[in-house]
Length: 153
Image (cartoon, rainbow, N blue to C red; front, side, top):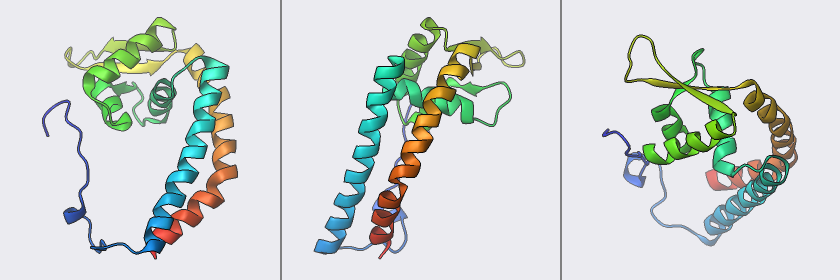
């Protein structure tokens, strides 16, 4: 896949997809989207009010923290995790770096590779926000799970 391109799954590649939907399918889709929108709106409000972050900046911090790499993530990996183009990830990281929440360092082995890590301030801020995120998801998960079950029927 060319650099900077996003990959999306399409219906022909997904097995057992219905070719036409019934009203219950639309209701299930709507219920899922509604439940997710409520969750995402709350989180958007929380990260804006408590940390003056955009949802994408919070997601970038979360992606970096959740990465399995000891040295952090590459900009390309962050781009993929956030499903944004490379230059958008760079812009997000510029803002996080300006706030001293993340740092970028060239890899010793390959100078073309840049690794991104959280700073102590970034990790601390993320920890406070993630507790709220986790609690909100636990609160809303029954509604989301119910909608997902309905989609599988």
